[in-house]
Length: 171
Image 1 (tube, rainbow, N blue to C red):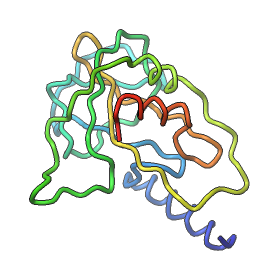
Image 2: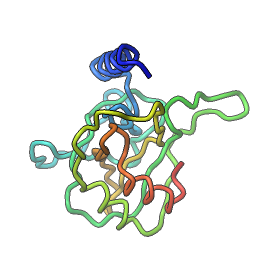
Image 3: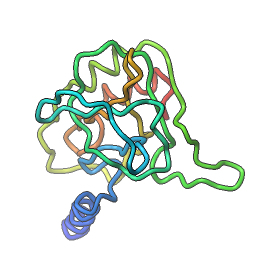
Image 4: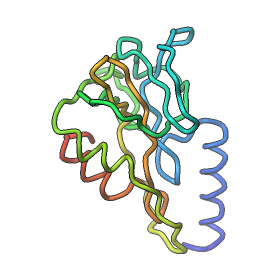
């Protein structure tokens, strides 16, 4: 891939991220299920950089993103609320799910991977984008939190995050 092509791709990714259209890859985070417009969220003390909780009952897969992802607080996680991967449009025989599906299982590896750090950027990267499903972690109180996804040297989710998602069947 030429330097010019990489620069154009990077500019497109930045433009999408700034306009709120980016949902995966290129250093972005997947957009998660969101509360409908006007929905109330539970008031909570949120540290800078932490993700804000949304009641699980208020999540839908087809609403626009309402809050940026953040660092997960220390909670007892019971499930993952998941929506189809971005870029997978609904069809007449496969409409967009609403509300999101709940996945249960051993969430410890995913939570540990989500607390990871970003890798330093690489100078050369492959020409592909990893598309992951949109998801939030759900705690024992029924509150959903949109996590920040740590990225590897090429701006894609880390191998640890991908392996943990694969183990849970999130695709």
